[in-house]
Amino acid sequence: MKLITAGIIIPVILSSCAKEKPIGKVIDESLAFAAEQYTLMADVMKDKPGELPRTFNDKGEFITAGPGWWTSGFFPGSLWYLYENTNDQKFRDAAAEMTARIENEKFNKGTHDLGFMLFCSFGNGLRITGEESYNEVLLTGARSLSTRFRPNIGCIQSWGSRAGWQCPVIIDNMMNLELLMWAFGNSGDSSFYKIAVKHSDTTIKNHFRADNSSYHVVSYDTITGAVEVKQTHQGAADESAWARGQVWGLYGYTAMYRMTGLERYLSQAAKIADFLINHPNMPEDKIPYWDFDAPGIPEAKRDASAAAIMASALIELSRYAEAESSARYLAVAERQIRTLSSPEYRAEAGGNGNFILKHCVGHLPGNSEVDVPLTYADYYFIEALLRLKNYLPAAR
Image (tube, rainbow, N blue to C red):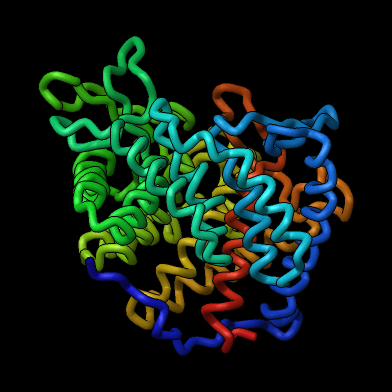
């Protein structure tokens, strides 16, 4: 397996006008704020055994979920990142405790989200601490995820069948393939690699439109393997570009290029990046509307979670791109980090349920988690901050 390493630092110093803080200072301030907020949240979670943070609603209620909910891995993952950045034992202890709450999900064959759940938590914990027991959890989880692969379709099934959907596959699935690629690299079992690559290739073939935007859901006939329907379940319309779906694809193909070295994945990531960056409805501050085709733009809701995921992906993609594209990706990611670090999107200390970011959108058509903080927004924001801090020291 060819792995793309971090051996090359892009020789770009991010632009900064005289009135703006140096980006390094912005990063340090936001990381310090994240540490303060998550110290408070970790204290709250001590009294909620078996639960993980999910959101904070407009009624002032702190909402948690059990370990089987798809976002369960993001809070422990954020704590691992904060431990990595601070070397503060309290974050390691809290991360280990919260990670342990998810362990039994390694046997869960009823979800496609084991990458989110296990790799963000146990994966980061293993990478940072070398805790050997985490290897078994990740390998077992990868085997569980592999049971959802449908060979005649060439994809991992996302949700269960329902009216109109025999085998629905969502673009979000691209985010769960890193667990399989890790398992291949650490077990030598090529089936993990084959599943991840086949899923990625099938998704390129069937999820993407001519303009390089993607559908949210593609459902397949379970017998013939043929596409039966293409929809955008969480977007404004079936043919719209749901923002978080687009950035899941961007992040997923960037990661697949890193893990395989296959140029078609780098090409796909670049196409998605260009679609996003050049979209006429991308706001100047680079925080996307919840859907690029949402009704009511420019008054439509923004989605800070999409911006955080996009920033993290662009920072990584910049390492693999040619100089001109690299500079473009970094400029957008820097603007997103600056905007997310501003009072408009970053919470006040001790507020927002101790989450970091405000103004995220989960599932607007379902009236679920609209204009609230979300644990995955915080996770990818912290990741983006660390990536920019660690990958581009020249920016400081």
